Every structure is written in C-alpha cells, then in structure tokens.
Length: 349
Image (tube, rainbow, N blue to C red; front, side, top):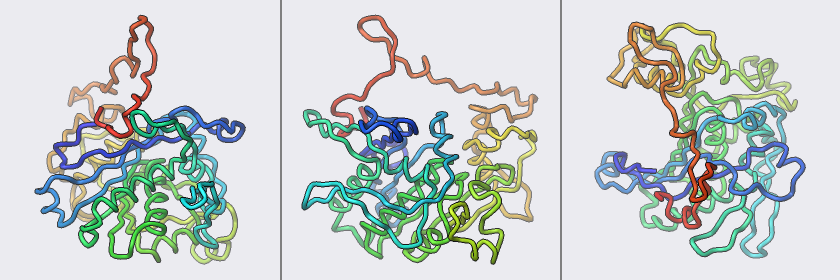
C-alpha cells in the first residue's frame, strides 16, 4: 500500500477472523483471516513539523461481508474479557479491563479473534489474535520512538464496523500501553454504539478523545440500542446494567447539510457510504450556513453508489476491482491470492 504522498509508511497489516461459525464451533484459527486494516507511522519530516508531533495511525476498514454484518448484529453486551499472552509464562490469560464495562459481543469477538500469522520471511506460523497483533505492533513502535514520547500521538480511525474497532482498540491501547502524556484520538465515521454507560465513562476517564461523524440520514449510528440508549436520559442510566442498553462515546459532529448535486434516497447502504460521509464533511461549514465544498471530487460519491443527479453524467457504481481480486496462477487457474511469507514484515509488497 503506497502512502508516500501522505507522509505515512505502513508498518503492519491487520487481519481478523470475521467468520461467526468458525469462531463458535472451530478451535482451529482461520488461515490468514480477512484484511481489516493497517498500522502506519508518519515518517515525513515536513508532515511531522506540520502536525507538531510524530503520529501513529491505526486504520480499520468498514463492513463488507455477510459475516461482518452478522457480527454487527450480535448486539448483546458482554464483559470485556480479552485474552493476552503473558511474556513471563508464554500462556494465554484473560484480562478484565474494568468492572462495569460491557462491549457489544460481535465487535469484541472480531477484535479478539484468532488468525494464523507468519512471523517474518522464514518464521514459523503462529496463532495470534487481532488484538495481540495490533497491541504488539503499537508496543514495538513506541519502543522505536521512545525518545520522542513527548511528541508522539496515536490516531485510530475507521468506518462502520471499523469505527467500532477503532474505538475499542484506542481504549485498549490507552489503558494498557500508553502513558498519560500520549495523545490518543479516534475519528469514527458512521460508528454504531460500541458499549454501555460504563464503557463510555471509562473512555472519557482515561483520556481517549473520540470524534464521531454522523450523517443525519444514516441509520447505523442509531444501533445497537435502538430503544435503550443515551437519549433515554435518566431511564437509560437507571437501566444501564441491562445487556442491551447502549451509550455512544465522545463528541458527535452531525453532517446535516447536503449539496444540491446529491439526490435524496431511502437506500440504507447509500446513506451509510463512506465517500458520501467524506463529501459531506468536506462541505460542512456550520449549522446556519449552506453547503460549501472545498474541492473534493464529486465523482467519488458514485464509486459504489448512485447518488449523483443524472445531469452530472457520472456512471453509477463506476469503481471495479480488477478481476474481483482474482489472480491467474501458473497452472492457468484463477484464485484468490495468498499472503507472501514476508508480507507481514514488508507490507508494501
């Protein structure tokens, strides 16, 4: 993945097991899992100077497969027991974040899912959770830049399912790895609710800064907890112990101004589209002012949707992945490519 224009360099790809049936009934981790994001670090001196610090980014992609939508709908709150490998004993143990903190089961199981992971070009294949993969890479980067701890930040971001995982991972990292003077921030696009009142309080108490971008026409940020949520006021706080009472975290930036080029739709997927979110954010100038884009290409809105007016003559769903990701092998057969043995250490390949 080339991020040279942004000033960031990818250091690790994130994989997870989002297959619900595999998680429930199979002890053997799913080979490789599915690609769910990446970790990158700012290496460009000019960008570091502009930010005023060196930034580490954890980016999570949004929901794509049917299995991932099932994870989104496993909306029972459960205690945050996450396994981790004890360096002293070499054994997996359970870790309780805090009493009273509950997380949506689907998000938690995805974050703590096990996948097969190859360590280096000639390394052995090991079973590792998505959480351990992320935490170990952040720990490594903190050690690499330990002399810059006063000018270091961690930014976690994602869309939809990725926004929930971005919030969860930022909470995990802040509480278990980072010292208080490291800025940990979440930029969450179209995030569903992640946890209960206890989780929302702990996120605020430990200093994780969360900014949620919400399209007023998108239904995903309203769930889970459609009927029992923070908008119920005192009643929700009184019944916070129930396994379906959810609370949003952080600060919400509601995107309520629509440009004239976008037609109104009741299509749930279209209103949830990330490119639409980015375009609405680009033109967001305040509640009492009209939409004013700073120049983001409007054609991007239609790359997976059909939202632009016909007068713009932008084809609907014009973006296509070449051959749907299939690669023709030496035997002449088409199949999904597998990770190269050294890809984890050299993600640009």
